[in-house]
Length: 171
Image (cartoon, rainbow, N blue to C red; front, side, top):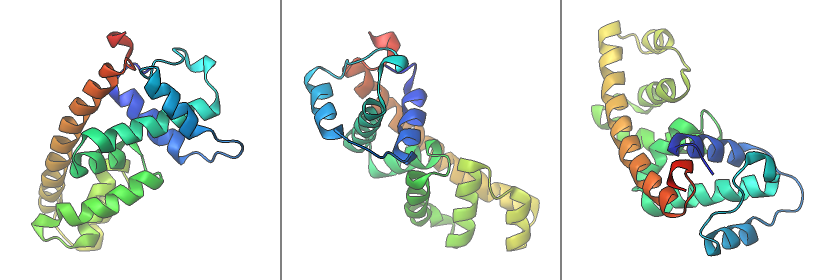
């Protein structure tokens, strides 16, 4: 069970980025989770690495199932914190967010700054030779669109987690 939607997102992205070697019965566990209404273990101490990975796969598949593509990408980009899913999502989002016609490199750096705080705004301003107000205006536009997608996606994911009894307050 998860404390809140953000907890599920952080744990899922973290588990998906961790290297897992050994017997993986993720598909079987996911099937059992779905058959049982996704109410397996309630304590993080009770679950194995396979269980954590299965729960992560379930959360990621729930995101893909209930969210629009932009919502899913923005959630994975932000909560992945620089992991594989985050970097891949950011690469796709750059194309969607480049409506300001800043160029892919600038949009990518601003998106990365929002999600991971790297590169710094000072580095972005220096590399593109833009004044501070301009760089922050660009960042504000990208951040606004990203937050809208995230908020909408989190609401949809929360409803799905509650439906399967995976949020503590929903139990």
